[in-house]
Length: 246
Image (tube, rainbow, N blue to C red):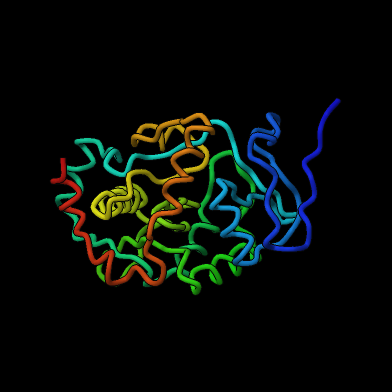
């Protein structure tokens, strides 16, 4: 007999079902309903859960097994790509253009995917989370032009990557590498990439059993983090520095 995920109560502070109760098919579907309020989103991320749904669906909550993560020092750029970077004047920064980044991610084409899961409601919810100091953007700039980036959520010393885009080939790789570079120097050992694909795996992502991920997560979210804007703390990272690193 097939199971259906439980419906979340109206209280945004109500606990989520245990991730171990998530469905195997589709992988990780845990709960349905609720809202995208700041308290509920933070509760979800602390528990290793994230929302992912289409415009014509209710809010769906997921905790897949395995979980795809990066070691912060383990983001890989190919030697060929590093050679290309040395000739570019790109600079990476954070939290200057969150709204532009999330909308660019929403509009980015995805192979084999129609439309986007980054709905208008999702954009508004993550902009609220950004104003609350827990959602951040990483922006790759060519002069004053935004050429790529990513956004995600931080709780404690854990970052949860949500989506990335490239307006110029390779720019999302630079954003990901800069994120890892900065997090490793802050002493944040890993960051979440949710669900894997060949591109992320080539860049060094690892598929962890959900229990292993949740064990690391439980420690990291209790560590003192960096709520608020990351503009000053993240600083500016030259693409050439990423090419030289390692």
